[in-house]
Amino acid sequence: MTNRADIDLKSLQAKLLAERDELIHDTKATQKDRQAVALDQASVGRLSRMDALQIQAMQVETERRREIEFNRVKAALKRIENGEYGYCVACDEKIGTKRLDMNPAVPTCIDCASR
Image 1 (cartoon, rainbow, N blue to C red):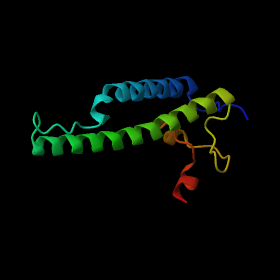
Image 2: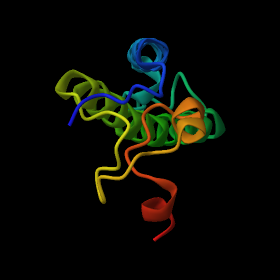
Image 3: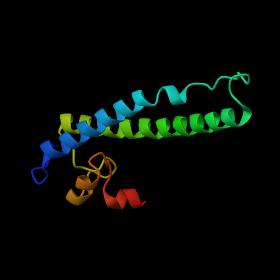
Image 4: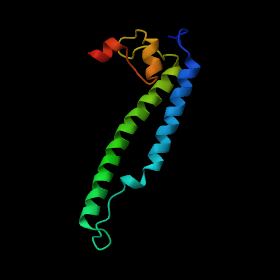
């Protein structure tokens, strides 16, 4: 299988690389917010600590989702490298051009995604 001629592969690859770089940047930028919250109640009140715990939990979940998206982007870049990009990983049919434009990391056609 070779890359599809009906898609702008360079543009989609550039979008994927930009998204990958943004995900890496966001992961580094929020690293401190995901660290364990100190138990020192002398310097931080109970409500402030509860707020900090809530922020930490939200950042941990955001990072989990970011990691999933990072893996999707990485897999899409690998499909480009292997000449398999633009084809559904489930049924091997072409993924719609508009679908790829909306989300270049999408691995499946609309029919397989609907199942």
